[in-house]
Image (cartoon, rainbow, N blue to C red; front, side):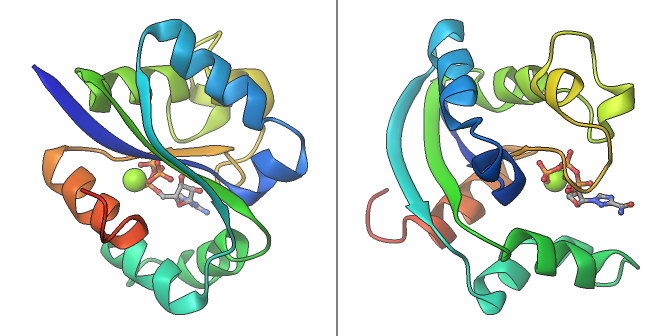
Length: 136
Ligand code: RTP
Ligand code: MG
């Protein structure tokens, strides 16, 4: 069954020229782009997107980071899209991410880990509404 997930190429990934690499991996896997946009988040949108982490010690730094420059937001769809993209991304901490994953190949530290992918169907629906309110 086809499903949708919200993917971000975070500001570190955009600054390092990795938009094309991430999109190539998505397409090579067989997933489809249903929406794609370059934008810079304001703090309010960032805080809404990361609301689940609002009580964590890293929340302020995370909002600073995700608003620090342009990011790419995409809606990616296909069978098992949510899990399939999380597999492409690898574990949150790049030094624990599976060899060959985006985070293992490109990152070193837990915050600056290049990409975001929704972690379940409810998160995906909530996050897609934040980034593309009129389109899905
Ligand atoms: P994401 O939501 O960005 O796809 O990442 P995730 O599910 O793999 O990780 P999550 O636990 O949701 O954390 C969200 C993002 O917060 C940053 N983070 N920093 N300093 C820290 O200890 C820490 N822990 C997490 C990362 O950018 C992580 O992706
Ligand atoms: Mg998450």
